[in-house]
Amino acid sequence: RRRRSSPRRLLSFVRVGFHRRPLRWHLRPRVRRHRRPLSLCVGIALCHGITGANAVLYYSRDVLQLAGLSQPRLINLGVGITKFIGALSSMALVDRIGRRALLLLGSALMCAGHSGLAIAFWQAGPASASHGVLALASLLLFIYAWNLSWAGLMLTVASEILPQPVRGLGLGLAYALYWLLSFAISQTLESTFETVGEGATFALYGVATAAALGFVYVAVPETASIALNMP
Image 1 (tube, helix red, strand yellow):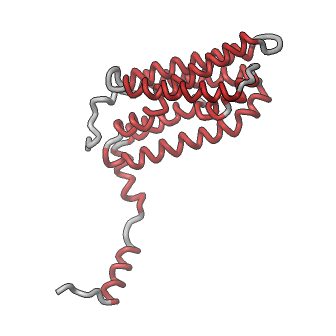
Image 2 (cartoon, rainbow, N blue to C red):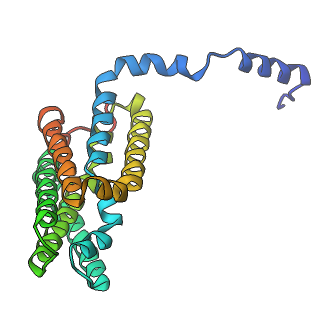
């Protein structure tokens, strides 16, 4: 027969539960053992965040209107089509050329997009048609490069780098850090425009994206051949 739980037996379980070690005692050995992949995962999230991708996407129509373009429907259509093409390109190339190569290529193109936007806003005089075309081309290049690389590969690479015992912890840290940075950059983009100007703002993002490119080149390994069930 199935044994019924007496009140005294339940009370003993509760007492044992209260005397158990806190969660940090269980996580501390894992963090010490896998410190390097956790640090690398946090670095990947930091690099993704400092590119300013979410802020640029959110304010894409406003940015192009500041550059002299005033057709919001066509702008939104172009952004949507570019994102779709970038995602398809990433799916087609990620297993052929590897994650690291896509991150390097995407970061380089994103840096070029930021540079083009900076040049478009640095042109002297009122915004002309040529400045608007340069800003539009640079923005679409940036969006394509982001969807080609960081948009889908941050969590992919992080999950393949992290061993199984700390994978949940590492991905949670990476995701939280990325969205915290995205929130901070989105909330300060317009005030940065007013303080230092649009051109200088995109130049700063270009420098940050170049730093992300350097980090990927130096520290991020190719993870296409790493199994997810790695101990």
